[in-house]
Length: 314
Image (tube, rainbow, N blue to C red; front, side):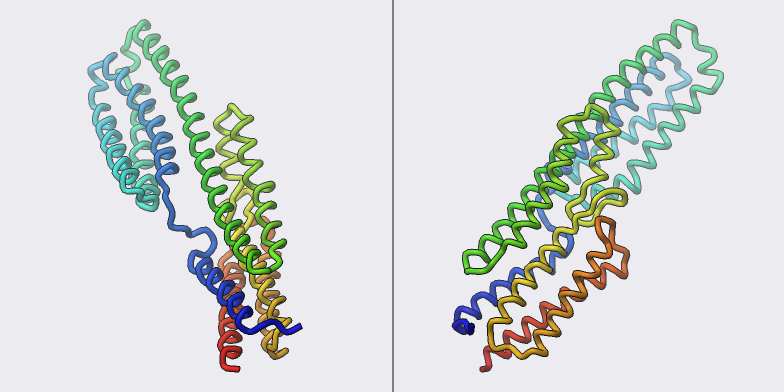
């Protein structure tokens, strides 16, 4: 069957436009509002700082020789002010960079210095009553921290679930748009549903059912919609979605007056991308495989664009 050319152009233009948009955003590099995620990450950092500063404050109160530890509290407080600036500016990349380069090292130095002080004569010269007071204070601070840490991790997790659902809703709208044009989008619908059952639902269940921070942290590292889990399930949503859309385009092109060699070239690009993605499974890309997947997707898009121009000229 040969479809009407004007209708065919609408379909191809729609497919290529959506494909190009997604390709630019490729594999999870979405520019979106990170405010909830940033605030949750900030809250988690604050749990650590409040705990550390509480311990230092108790030591300084117990012994004048511990007064120098206040300098570390001041530095950590300054770091939190800087992190708040990143939150206010919705600067996710800046936040992560600062945590890695400054906050985490400063926190480590403060912790090590506190532990070192407890091995000095200043600690040994404390009375039994002072030591008991510090131990009691530490236990209280630690209990508060454990609760704060767990809640903040769950907040991070819930923010991730919300973000994942928003991304899947966006993909569903794209699929529905294609469906409204008469295209068979069952493959896209299945990808979205699989993402929910394999990634979003298990992550939500872990957040709902666990009361242990380590388990929540493990869940956060275990379920990734794209390619972010070093150890866990990577769904590779964007690559799967793009390949499925390309297959929809290929099937539609097969009903039109397109030369067999062009269709073969297009199908080869699609199969190459699919085979490379299948070789990854739920693991992470290595650089070579990532190039194989996305270079073939890009080549397939270019081939569709070439076919579209050819048909326009007929």
